[in-house]
Image (cartoon, rainbow, N blue to C red; front, side):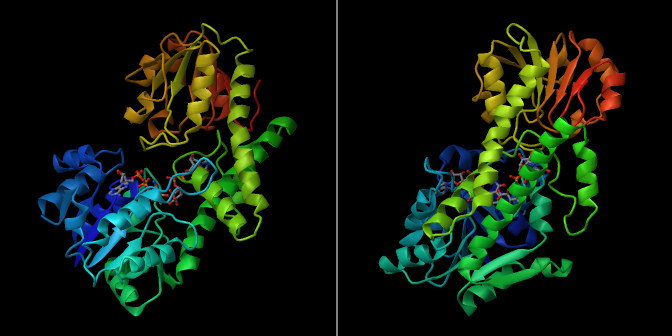
Length: 433
Ligand code: NAD
Ligand code: UGA
């Protein structure tokens, strides 16, 4: 079977590499020439653990190739996946221009027996509109919707061992070919659920919005913990022991970021509105998460007794979460820029050495290690819970710093341990003495 994947971002590249690993013949397409050239040199343009090895293995095996020629890539494909971006427009709705550009680009040459599968996250009704867009051009092919649920940083494992695969189809032909594509997952007994197009499209948004709401809920509980003297880590532990609640996505922090929760909650609220349905829980999740960033800035300034001008601040981790170089909608953008505005001298160490990040901040010093960043710092701030920040020798770190303030927005350390190392330790939803 020949698979073409359009878009070689976090989803398209991971999907293409993993489909090749399943044994299929895969062509990955991108209209960013520099990206395709880099991929053809064997360079992985994103930080995603394990992706480089799997990509090299499948390219060498002759099952995986990269091109910018979309028209040619779809000519003899049996199935074509669209995995281009669907970012937010200024009004919060999903920008579908990349999806329709890709559909337009492939329309003249796509194999008329192929099935076209939308994998990008798109509002309800989009896959039907894609079908109509093609029909209006005289192209009558089957369409399907197959949402992707991978998380950055764990993308390969999530793709290879997903909790479920959702396939929105309208025809037997689409069902049959998608069954073949995902057959390698049957051995792991992974639930494969066939639905209609609308249900599949909405399932993706409902899942992301629910997870965003869960994170937001625990962040609001953290606010209350700070006011009443409870410990949010313990509250989350107790809640998570209830199997109906589950222990995932109850880690309080600086608010959710990334390329998906912010844009998908906004898009869901927007298209629900178009259907005449209000979703106040979703709207409030968005508002609460936006306020969270201001709250984190206020928390940092208060812990620094509002004296940050001219002070040395070491920032550990700026990506929106660990194990990615993705800076899209990272809480660090507002937080670090606000500290720069306040006149702080900022040293940053991020283990991904993200080039996206380097474009985000002016007048900061980029450091090569935790120790380099923290040398002589008045304050150390942990913004992202990278694994290498989880077992720092706090006593040694304290001795490198100038001041003794450690602000940990990911609650990595037990309060007593950080205090025993000589830090004033300010975390989220826990005591700060
Ligand atoms: P991305 O921005 O990382 O990558 C998109 C790629 O598509 C880019 O390389 C871009 O150059 C390319 N592209 C755009 N228009 C094109 C065209 N006409 N022809 C060929 N290539 C084109 O995006 P992403 O993060 O991979 O997200 C893709 C979709 O998957 C989005 O809808 C997103 O919501 C969804 N999604 C993302 C994740 C994630 O973890 N990032 C997880 C699940 C679902
Ligand atoms: C999320 C979903 O988890 C994926 O299932 C989905 O496919 C993807 O969005 C998408 O549609 O793009 P991702 O954005 O990679 O994946 O990262 P998450 O691990 O979900 O984290 C999202 C944000 O929530 C991060 O800023 C993270 O720091 C924050 N978070 C997460 C918390 O603050 N606390 C938690 O307990 C969990």
